[in-house]
Image 1 (cartoon, helix red, strand yellow):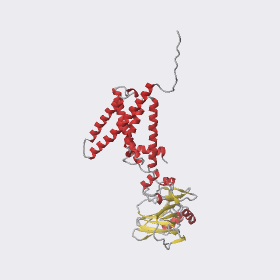
Image 2 (tube, one colour):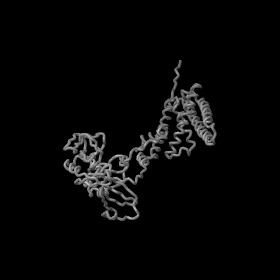
Image 3 (cartoon, rainbow, N blue to C red):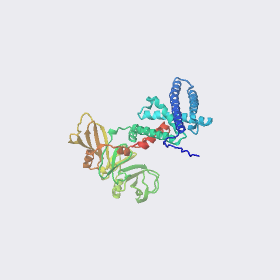
Image 4 (spheres, helix red, strand yellow):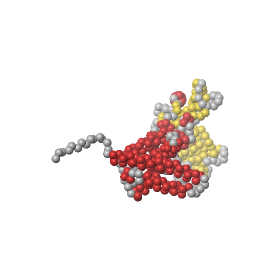
Length: 441
């Protein structure tokens, strides 16, 4: 019997039934997108109209419309029952309809809000409403290459939206400025060798490197207390006016010296029913303190005492205590710090009698506690101010090198913006946070 040869031609194309199944699957996905998109637009319009029209049936109408959407999607699932593992049975088609309708509608709402916030205007193109439903139905296809393709498109579109949203969102610096109620152009910074900026003060302040973060108070204070019977070194240690005691020495009846455990020493002098307490920083000589407490005398107003202390001047005097300020103002707290701020330039650029004009736009001012340079630049004046421990030349150089703050400068001096109470847990806020994380600065 003769042998017949059978020739098989390899065309590289899938068999016709396979191609037909792919086209039916794509048709099912497309119909699901059209049905979902139309219902999303019409249903949302109906519900919104009912709610704003004062009807209490808006939520019931939304439920009815969703049930109709699921029913239509179940009908669409019959176009290609083998296209998805979920559409082969009635229960599977119900699940498929709920998944496509629910996830598609949720994605449609999010895409609408995100695109509008990003300035893409998704809401201006109603035909794009079919896209979320199409993508969800496509991801649920049985053929892995089709499902993977729709998933890749979904991820790509999501990244595009997130990138656009990140570009449209205010930066973290803008949020910090808004929370602090400051304008970016009002913040000017400078740099000085040997100084560093202090964080989260809402203004540019420089402190010398290695400065004591808790410097002792340079003030001397004289208190007038009611005397109580007892030993000279017996006093109420809970009274904050007394220093923490390391040792107490009774030098003679009515006179005691307190060697403080921290940064303050004191003398106690009991005279005529009054207990006088003189406190001072440890660097004040003990003999100076003794002479001062023994020279204490009554003054006005009644109940007030004062004395004479070399190198100190009375700053305030009243019955609650007399405060003495050092004549050397470089000992005052903050005397080594530099502060930079701005203010609107006045219409006239007069130089007061206490200032020196160095250039037409630069002047120097000084008082008993601080000195500063003022630089006029356009609509603003830049003020670089320092304590009297800051050399004048340093202030001048800092003023001349002042410049607008960079984003990093602003992040240093401005605290983070507090989270919004109304949006901190909303899905849209989570999407904003993701956009900043992926594509933010």
